[in-house]
Length: 450
Image (cartoon, rainbow, N blue to C red; front, side):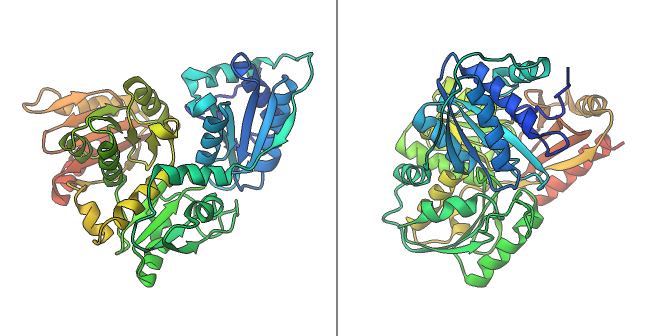
């Protein structure tokens, strides 16, 4: 029995192709997924990104699904949120082959149930792993059928139906696709809109020749920032490899925090549905729940991670959810995350008024933040306990352990979380100003790195 714990992660399957992941293993994953969802669905929709290994791995997975008697609908090249659209539109489970922002040698599988419902460790991944480790049972019946379907135009039309951009002023928009799937989806989604598109790195290339397709790392935004300034664009957008996350820079080339984008989109969704619920994870800015409340909504705080966001959205009927990592979730998009829809909301908000993006987003940015600071720590539990002991019981200080350790002083706060996969502690700090952030960051790191 093989041990697959190294590649079956909390929310997906991911590993180095040829070393940890090959066609034979992926075929078994496909068969195991078919066994998991067979009682509820007769077919599976499959998409893949532009990585060199993706078509063959997607084909092997399809073979595994069909070997258990289920049909396969292949949508071919797709962004992850395009796969979620297909799962929702067709009302069938889905599998997306991508390693998102990981380097070229990686690939992976994101799985969902019908209607883009998440599949994580507690909702099927552990069962799939167990089935593959113990050997997938043979199916004696007839193999399922294979068909192909192009859903890109339907996906684009559906997104445009959720945000009215017809009346906006003309905008110049620079988009850095990072040689990822944004180069596939953006032209079709933007077609017919009053947008002058300035494309960067739209060539689909899974070797990522220009920079990593990971806009969370500031160095990968440098080219976009320079192009926005050079062209006098109104806004810049950067997508990750599978184009489910979108990062925004303003007309000055300055990054707009995902918390500000979350707050902006939340106000638009609350205007459409007064009194609605908005989900935010515990690392988003305190400005998010403040602004949601000020606009008559109810803010619900969750752990980090799409499975927690989606489950809370289902429980509360939330209209929208946002994370600090630039994942944005919409009830009208089957509660799935789509950076493209968030981008359309930003463009609509900008184009509906005459001001600049920096002026617009200033309304949603109230505090200074550190960003994520990683520390290599062997004894994660011990270091977190030491930090908790330093602050627990202080007057005016609240401590909670919803996800890692959050310490709130009222006017400032920090969260310290252990990585699931590496010997790292991740620190996020927020305060009224940069000096406050620096002081609290130094104070906490002195304990973490002691």
